[in-house]
Image (cartoon, rainbow, N blue to C red; front, side, top):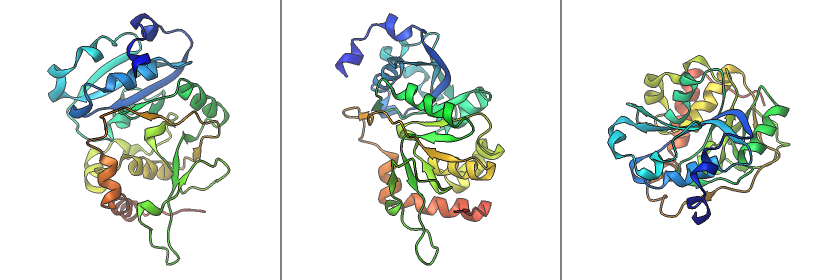
Amino acid sequence: MLRLKYTSLAQLKGNENTIPVVVSLTTIPSRLTKVHITIRSILSQTAKPKKVVLWVHESLRNQIPESLERLKGNIFEIAFTPLDCSHMKLILSLQKYPDDIIITSDDDLIYDTTWLEKLYGEHLKHQDCIIANQTRVITHGDDNTILPYKQWPTNYDPDIKTDRILPIGSAGALYPPNSLFEKVTDMALIEQLAPKADDLWFKAMSLLQGTTSLQAENRPKHPIPIMGSQTISLKKQNIGKDLNRKQWQNLTAHFNLSFKE
């Protein structure tokens, strides 16, 4: 954190060695004063994105700290929205940058300096696929009922090839253009079926589009949590109350989803 805090603005805002990707994320009020550390880690990559966009609820327009404001430039921008859900980190950028590769990140992590370079390198090998640095495998029991989310194994094995692979956006997930079904931005359906499960919503949209999801082979080091940023966590709610399984059941029933393997 100290290294990132004291990296010069000139170095962070420089646009040398950029790659054609948009990094998209959102934040919540409790992390507004800390998310600049995540942004700095993204702007300190060995290969920089052409754009980083932070989506913020419009009620926070007058509360943006100087630590964020001073990072704005050719690469980093802050965009405001009336939406208030985790899904907006991807769906809004899909609308704003429909022809671009979009990579999602979380707002409470410090990313390794090779994070973007390695993920983009994976894309060059599998250009029509969604690729994530961390995945789970959606798992059913012997009676074909879906198991609790805690029993969906975390996966780092790129040799596992199955359409049950679930990209986890926090460690970085790359979405090429047109990889998700046209209803991906349908907020009414999101609120009805998966209001607190953006990863599951995007997985359903990829299945409907027929897009393969892959576990990245050449992964960077694990992201480091920012101190004091974990007080409020959607992940704790979803896993602790098994809301992910309930929301996946909603999506499966509504869209009649099934797996080929």
